[in-house]
Image (cartoon, rainbow, N blue to C red):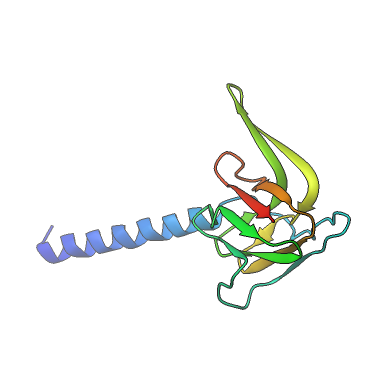
Length: 150
């Protein structure tokens, strides 16, 4: 094999490897419909197409993480999560128990986005002071966050 053929082979291998990585990343999560969120008493939620840059009181879903993972707001504030990862994620209020048998999601029903595809947002208005933990139902072992309302 000549040097030119060797370089061509390496380039082709790199391109194919990157393509496989992109396909695997797009498959992150599971397929499904984009369900609307449930509402808790005295609060509002919505799922919309994301069209704006990051704002105050916004949580980015990026690289299989909530950024920031902890956010403090005042009562009456609407927090918006913007899903920028390939695939699907959720924002589900509640906790995740972790034990020897694995992780067990424990949703509390205060808010839930359903599955959010890339480019979608979910908003929830926090009325009462308190601490509101949440997690991704698809990735409960690694994706967790907290909203603290003062």
